[in-house]
Length: 289
Image 1: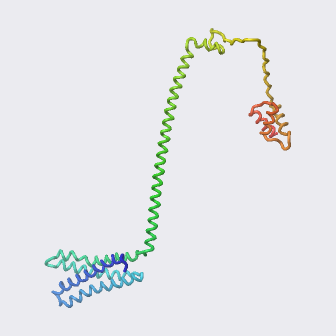
Image 2: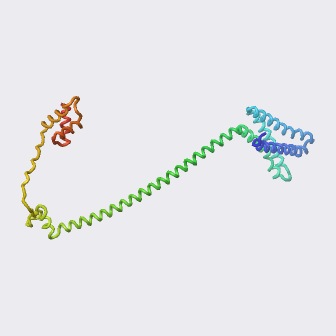
Image 3: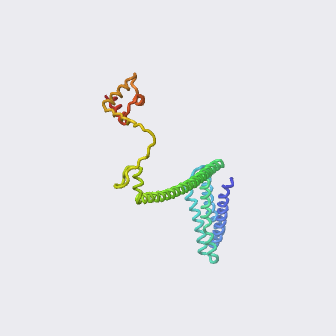
């Protein structure tokens, strides 16, 4: 018998022996005054023997992995009879009635202990199975501990990141506030300077006239002979039709037809001028034609 099994079967055996001895003694003492003591002894042995026989049969069925409800019912019946005998004796006893009543539950307690032992046997596992279960539980605990540590680390990292972002945002806000203050002071100074009494005269001396009735534009002096420089004539803008014709000619100047990038490069290398929007629009019109 294994050590765990002994932990449940030994109390059941001890309780059974005590309850049987107590039942036999009570029956002999109680019924011995009303009938010959050998008959009282037979009655007591009958109660204990019936209980013991049903218990032995239940243990045999349990060892075979089987169970019988009638046998169990008979066993509990004998236990109740033994308990009833003890209670009746305690009720009729002249002395120590409380003590006899206090031990009247022993037969039922013995049956309950055997029930607990049977439940232990039905749920008992081998050593290898217990080791496997312990390994699984330990692995689950390890994984849970690692997950908790990872979550705590991630929470700490996120807290540090948020603190850094908050501090950086506060610094940016302070710099922006200082810059806004500086700009406000600069604009205030510029406005006060512009609205000054002699500011308009100073400005019109180097720029076009901004205030009526002040000194006209001041021109820089010139030393030495000067030759007039003819004004550069502005290149006339190409019409859409001309632009389409040039784009079509450059596009089909080679076989296969040039791409837009190649056409644009050759168009500008030839000295033509057109905005990117107009040139791309002409390209789309030529391709779609």
